[in-house]
Image (cartoon, rainbow, N blue to C red; front, side, top):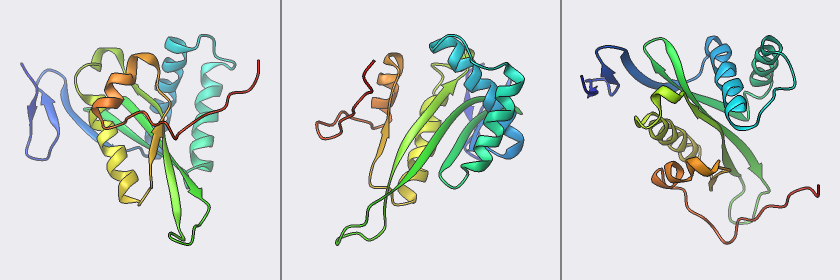
Length: 169
């Protein structure tokens, strides 16, 4: 059966349940930590701590950084299948704008079985709506090579004015 949009804006597949996009709650953080763990295994290699310790570290970190970082999750039914973090960074005031901030999208992950279904795009849309609703001047992302197309579809573009410096090896 194909996905269908319900009256409340969720998509649903009768075999596996509706997909919803929402702000993560404290009860979601263990599942979010698992997704972050999986991202590292898929992209970077070997974790530096055991899984249970990492779950505790990420959960504590999220609580400590709730003022600057928010997590959006995708759920299929009750199962968290994706995450996308928004970091908000205050900027130096200017004479034109006394309150300024920018954002950075971080740690976007969709479970392999849900990739290509539009879930990542829906999370990015929610993150960007939140960011621009907060009045952020810009939102950046550091992408893996395989996700560049998804970010481009979501409205991200290269900029000749946004540069980065990396530590010397």
